[in-house]
Length: 334
View 1 (tube, rainbow, N blue to C red):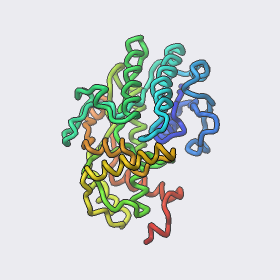
View 2: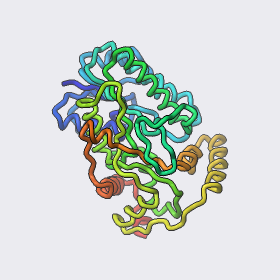
View 3: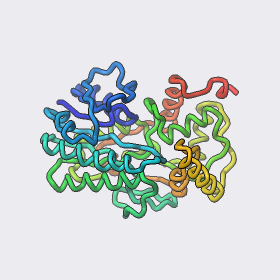
């Protein structure tokens, strides 16, 4: 079976590629010209150079493919040019799904996000059916992914055999950027995390998340959504596990929300002047106001999703960041 994967050079996408290769699939990976392809180094696959904004090129890329895994997205908590994010996340999704419909693929697994789902925010886990609207979306990334999910639903109505997966917060190897959650781990390892906010996340190993995509393509019901998550943990609990893994002391100071929000506003104003990414993204702080807990029971029940212990996933992330030069050795030892 030949499979087309977008976002293959990124965190989740590269793990999806590896899981597909384990299953004996023939993989064609979309990669932009000049992109960092270190996550694909040494893998037996075909690179198709293209761009989600090039509808004609995507048709060529999908020719002869049986399935599509659309994992590509512009994932940033701050951008000086929001229109670019919408071009990729919304327009690019429209383009790739149109190409998939034209190619007649047998199944599409579309990578959305739990950020597009409803969430009470008080520690009660959200589900695939928790009410939500565009007004609930905080920041351009969430808004663009929410709108992209609506595009996916329109293609389902047109007959595209598509399943939506909503990953929670993946951690583990290959987080080359790193993601905002990966950056939290890196900052902790480098002694740059003196305090924490009172918030929470649902954590899943990136490899288990990738396998969940494949299970969704194999067993998922067309038109349905599946949360790919594992364990709900507060940020304080996550730092406690990192302390146990690394021996570094976890931050003990819980920061109040209001002054951090004010600092983020000032930081973002400076970034608009300088063009540099803010140290404290305002969107990230606003998102942290909600406890982002989710229930993945549907994926466990209908797809057979399995997840390793979160502590093991954190250990894998720590080892990968250390092995790949993200940790200042002198700071870490200190």
